[in-house]
Length: 247
Image (cartoon, rainbow, N blue to C red; front, side, top):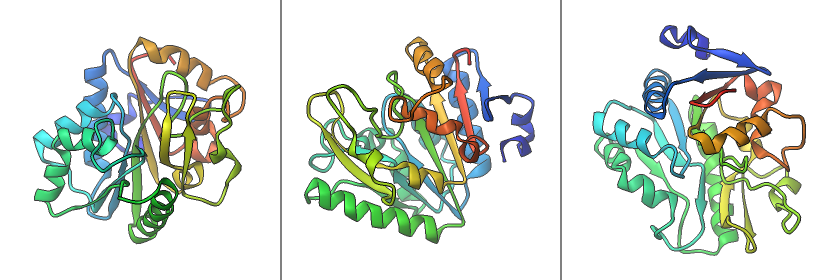
């Protein structure tokens, strides 16, 4: 898929099956990701958006330029709480003005938070994601890799925490409560849902991601390093990693 984009094909390298582009600086990576989205996303595409610090400049640029046309957009994951709470992904994306652009284009936006329990909210969004993946001909996502190797909202196991998401293989959206760690209450798309996507653009910028990328390419369990999911043969071929770190 990515090598069919002529402007991108000469930049792509492959390691362990995954397509990656090494850029000089974060700004170059954001610009490249933006152009890839402009070429891949259309009215028949559902585009899922991750939160966090990394993709924020990308969303800001897309909102400013006003060129992106999508069938719908939705969230990959969310920090559970009140609607538009201070640390929510929907609030971050709202601040980039990307949702305003979608409104101008009359593009439907699917958010996660609602005034229901964490379990009920997760069940409702599971139904939403299933509907979206069936309704649209093409699907993709903007994702990131945390410095601990997590991706989407999928936290790794620790000595003091076993993520229940890894125990359930039938859900497209699931939830957990990391009350002893940094993740807190999360609702996230799962690996089975991400497997259904046609393309994934994974962003990893900054020196703090160097160790995470190194560990990602090491042999081991996804329970230890969730981003190892992208190295699966069926996933690697439809994943584009854009980074300013050596891979």
